[in-house]
Length: 78
Image (cartoon, rainbow, N blue to C red):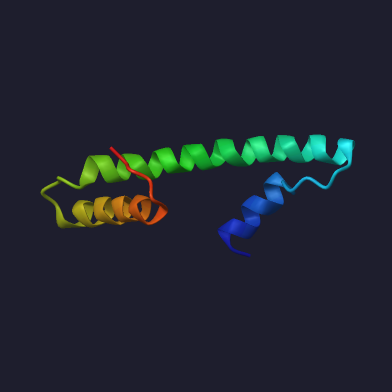
């Protein structure tokens, strides 16, 4: 089981199905999923912003990788 599968299993289904009781639970799952994504993106942004201009090669590489990730999503990170 990979990280994606673990998170999906922990959070639960997020796709609405058109049944009120089920969809209320799935909306809560969706809110939890987006809150997690926001925190993870903040972590990656921190790496990008705080390491690109480092003097250490390994930190520059981590910063570049994080920055390139945002570029691949079409997200400008500052």
